[in-house]
Image (cartoon, rainbow, N blue to C red):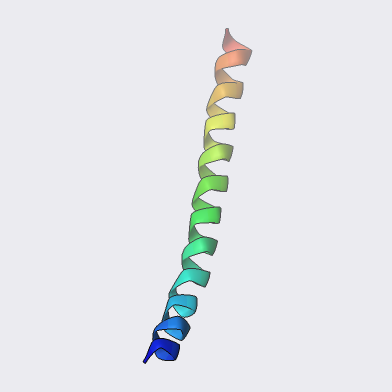
Length: 42
């Protein structure tokens, strides 16, 4: 049973970490884009 849980955890954690990484990079890009706009105008 523990082995099954471990496999499931790995199966769920891998895509989750990938998604988190993608979301953070997208957010960072978005904020940098907004900040760049603000700096250029200001």
